[in-house]
Image (cartoon, rainbow, N blue to C red; front, side, top):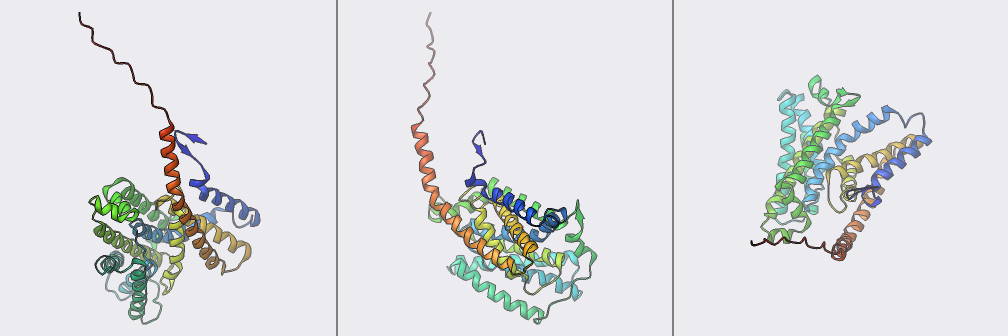
Length: 343
């Protein structure tokens, strides 16, 4: 199907076709439980926080940086927001802002490690994740905090509109804002240029180090928000961050093969999050096994990285073919220019 250059080709929309296939298969395999609105609402709500974390990671990876600390950052930020409320230090709104600020602080330190200390982003953020895990033990005494008894704090994610909990609304708003920043503003162009070819971007006058630092800081802040939303939605947990890491990476890598192949993009990432979640939910309903989630997420990450690498290898060939088609297109004949007649 083509309309003014828009195509629904498999190379750009394979995720949509896979999603439709998964829905069809699991609807036939579990007709009483899978194809229901309760499943739709459950998937949307449970994956909203994973989507927020994936979008945080997306910002860092758009700038060419890995942030392996996203899960640990979310975990620490959420627990901090819970503890200050349990101790009566802060109310719900200041505690939420504190959790986001904690995430921003972690992202800022990650940026310092990568930009100023010249540590590889994967190694630096991996080390930071371990540091944050240790801080989590210190802050909590290695004991899981009780849930916050606050109708406002819990209601800001658990209240619903049209059956969808508010946390889904936050995900949509965040996605729209990030899409606008990355696609429609100079900041987004600088971030993409930094991640695409840092040397060329530097020669073009882009402050590569500055935008890498900003991207990592933004990643931390978004993950801090994700952590606060998680504890508001489901209650505190000392290990929820670990469960968010693999799906986030799988979503960003798989998302980079969708809609605009070869480019980290917001809508491809969200599509990938829900495709993977649909597969996990369907397999759990059919098999009843709880280990399906870890297995499916691991396989999805491997497949997503392989597809993303293949897509990047294919990009130069596609560009060459487009250039060849342009060169082979004969130019339009020039319009005759009417000569002024002299009387």
